[in-house]
Image (cartoon, helix red, strand yellow):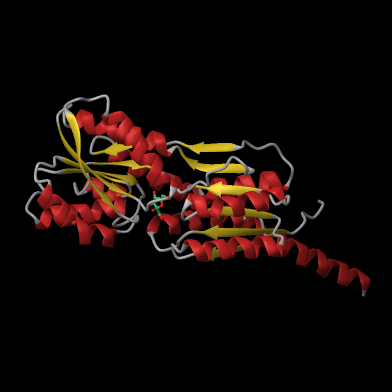
Length: 326
Ligand code: FRU
């Protein structure tokens, strides 16, 4: 069997500070474990756009074989991503977008659709009447822009629904804990909160509870991660009325990277599906993700066993050879 060449993949990640990014990395590592010929390096920008610019420059300087970028903010990373692409380095944009079509492939959800689905779901919950408050992700990051646009588009179809207030968050719960009490005091009429991700939705739930409004205000989040304290559990516990599944796509990013590196056919836009999870289907979704995880673990165990057997077989062959030669 011919040996695969060594491939160097650089990954410029906007942050690793939350469960969703950790799930993304775990997915990447799972897929990378099948490709020992890949040298993978991740640089974590800690939500700092300037630092991320330097990271991308560094990967270009190293002339990595492929670059994966999840841009903290779209605008400031666009020129650099384009420049890598124009220099012949394949570029995969993951989850958050640049504002350019000059990239090799995109992997991630359709955030306009995430926002629209949240808006339609909110309208259903409130039977077309009520006051809605939106908690946005970090300004300038593409999912915040697209989720907002989709959400307001969907609400516009319901004259009885008003976007009563807005809060500019930064994807992190602390920004919500600090600002939401004042916003809610200004907008006591609020019936529903759409938070651009589950961690901010969870923080909103905390605030709403502290203000004694938990029975009245419903909260929708985005991400729907399995695991303790994450979105699926928040829905099961009733802290969130619903969440929209938004897959981190780590496995898919590495699979796409290998197709590109091996000059195999690949799709330019790899859109991961999203769906609403609420009390009606959270049990089913949860057991399905758990079953999938268990199956994948089985497969990995079998792969490891196979590698061990190969090694044992190779050393036995060596032994026979030595005996015959002596
Ligand atoms: C994690 C995260 C997710 C969100 C995504 C948007 O860092 O904030 O919660 O869905 O990034 O890019």
